[in-house]
Structures are given as C-alpha cells and as structure tokens.
Length: 244
Ligand code: ADP
Ligand code: MG
Image (tube, rainbow, N blue to C red; front, side, top):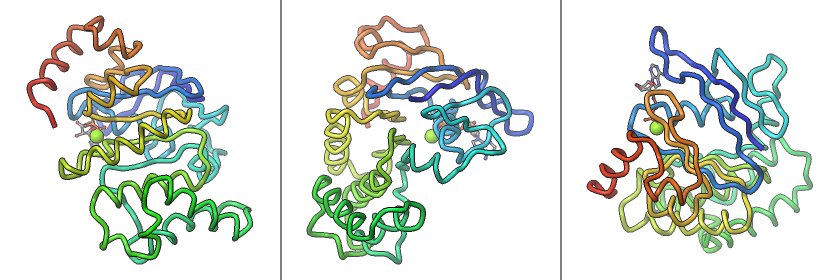
C-alpha cells in the first residue's frame, strides 16, 4: 500500500530524513514512534505530499509521490490525514466540514456524499452534532470529526500525526477508541503517537525513528518484548517513566 524507498530530506544544511525505507501492506496498522524532533511528522507528511523531499521515492498504492506529474488531490484522497491540531474549518458546520472535500474533488452524487457523511458521523459518535460548528465541540469531539472528514474521501490508508497529543487526558480514550475500531475494520493505518498502550494493543508493526533514520521496523510484539535496538529500549523506558 505504501512503499518508502530511501527517502531523504534536508532543511538547508540539516538532514531531517536520512534514507528511510519501509513497506506497509494493506490492512497493516503501523505505529511510528521515536523522540521529539526525530523526523516523524516530516516523514508522514512526505507520504501525502504535504512536505517535499529531495531523494528516494514514495509510492502510495502504486502512485509515485515525488514526480512533477503527481495529482496531489488524488493522492490525498487515497491517503487521508489527521493532525494533532484537528484543522477543522471553523466557518463550516461539522456536517459541511465532512462533505466539503468530496463535493469539491470527487464526482459523487450529492445525496450519496451527504448519506455517507451522516454514516461517518454515527460511526464516530457525533450524529447529534452534525449542525454545530467546531467551536461548540470538545477537543475529543473535534478530533473525531476530523477523522470522519478524512474518511469521507474513502481513503485506502489513514495517516495520523499525534492525533491525541493536543487533547485533555479524559478525551484521549474516545479518540483512540475510534482509531481502534477503524483498525479492526481493516483500515491500513500509519500513526505517529506516543500512546504506547494503543501501540501495544492495535499496532501490527512499529517503526522506531531516531535522528532521521528508521532504526527499528519490527512486529509490535517483538518491539514491546524488548527485541529492538538499544535506542528503542531507552525510548521505551523513558516513555514508561513519563506516561502521557
Ligand atoms: P518529530 O515529528 O519527530 O518531532 P519533525 O519531523 O517535526 O520531528 O522535525 C524533525 C526536525 O526537523 C526537527 O529538528 C525540526 O526542528 C526540524 N524541522 C521541522 N520542520 C522544519 C522546517 N520547516 N524548517 C526547518 N527545520 C524544520
Ligand atoms: Mg511531530
């Protein structure tokens, strides 16, 4: 579903990605973790072309990301993205937030887009909030709406960049619950997160990133059993001592 082939990227003289390679198969749930500043956000944003990269290539369902001919809206329809900061459109109702992109870029019937949006709102537990504006919702509700909005494009893969990091602790679980259900339904997911409980329960694989390199790429069970790099083991100890 996603192939990363020797991806390199620099910000000026600073090399943020130092040759990252990985394969993510259909239905896999891959958690990307690692210290702050290691390049996780940059890596995940390269996948749907929110960041450019100079070297290597990324394929999403056979579509090359680094190419003058890449259709960015088709790419982003394939790879939905959820950010730490929700990024809902504040001037649109929740329902309109969800319907906007399909209406603008997909040739689907209006009624079908609306019905699908309502189904998604039910799925994330927001059916009673369809007509509210984002400001009237809690952070957890806004993030669930952002997940529904990404799903509205019928993506093949969902990318998450620390989706619970901006939430008050009591709202983290409701968002992780929606993500867990999505994973159980077979969605291909790549998720940057520090939620190691979620990673243990839901991830099929862990990519541990440090200083711009994928240092570990292994089944979640192996990773959490400590069969990973010394750097990852130190990271796990640190996370265990600093929950949340
Ligand atoms: P992570 O998500 O793992 O915390 P990021 O991918 O956000 O890491 O950032 C990796 C490194 O790249 C950090 O050192 C950060 O300061 C640097 N960086 C990120 N964005 C930019 C930018 N637009 N310009 C320059 N440096 C950046
Ligand atoms: Mg980040």
